[in-house]
Image (cartoon, rainbow, N blue to C red):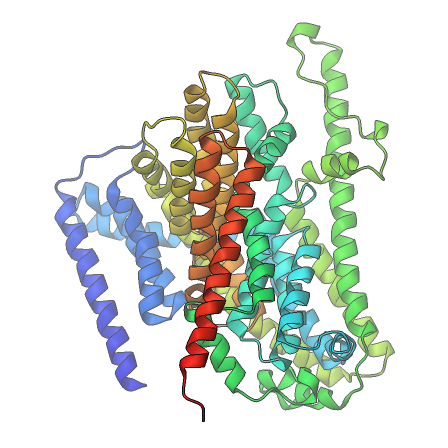
Length: 596
């Protein structure tokens, strides 16, 4: 262990030294470009990623990257000035403070501790144990446990944060029981969170995506709403759809590859936990909670709080969305009294004319939600209250145990909270250095219409991976790259523009899916009790495989004129062929091994 620590420390010194040398070398040669940023703007996110893999200390890596980013915002202008160095350190602190002070971030932060406390109470009151005992009647092996995890991930399509926390925490003891690795669980959770939320026509993502599409549509004079453009792009969301197919195909085929194969083999060599896998308390090393193993399983102690959380979240989104729709209608009506008809903005949707049983109704309502993080935070508190009520009414918990649950829940929430704050701070750093704009200007050059969407997919992927934010990548590329696609289409809303919309949205999710500094990646690993770097290292080959399929067998053929349905079918066919070959190679290797 000491030798590994020394090697990692040496690696850190080498990387830091190399970055310092590079930075010092460019200080006197860099030409300032306030519009697109400088090439060293990629150093902070690159540094965070490299150091995280070398040291396996994500908090330390993010902290160093933020400090370096702060210095790069000030020192290159005056490298010999002590004041510039002081301002650089001050800028790093401002990045962190502004992350914590951000209203939306505060609402997300307030959501995390109640969820973790709720989970601890549900565990200690025997709630998860009751669900596990019920699910074990239907889940008979590793494949069915993984399939159940994937199906739950698809069903929790409303929000990616809720998806990761609920599915990861609930399915962990079941996958442990059937010796499915924590790395595999984290991948299944991560692969069915952002990809599903990004595709769903009713989710907390849809408002953001539609607002960006609508804004660029108005700028280009496209006579389509943001929702219409979203549905046009839906046919070209190859990565997200292929990832969903991949999840189920590789589960059914039972074939792993890359680091995930080693993780699965290691998990298979371990003995399954006792008590039908329900002894989550042993992982907490808390004698008070370990006593809960003796409590009979009560599924209602888990189902009621979780259902309450989801129902409250959906109800809150409905109230918020309908209020926004009614506000827009009132503002439009007031405007119509004083504004000429030819100068009027388009009439907003009249929610009273739609039926609540129609998909269009919920699409409009969820699409106009403005306060989804706040709704989610309130839903978490509501779920926590229900968990406390159920635990007390069932008589399964004493006050002393509840106090311990609060302590352990808040304690477990501290690490993801710190990582999230640092990840947001690094995003602020990248925004200040214009990292995304620099990557866009480098990767998205002038190309033919048939090559532009695939290059745009790569651009979005690299930007999202480096910055750790799909939202930020969409905000950078949709306003800047979509007009280029529109121009390549001959200033018309044509095939290249529609494929480019799908390429930006998908590339942003792919890069975010792989990045170790992404909040959804962090949430998935924490909820699954998996080391963050192990999660990223094992899922990266899977995500890359799906991305390669999407790029070469879907985006390129579609950009050349092939129907998106046939392009998707081609990519799925190649995926099946890959697993068939992998299975044959596995059987051949097994047959060639000498029998014991």
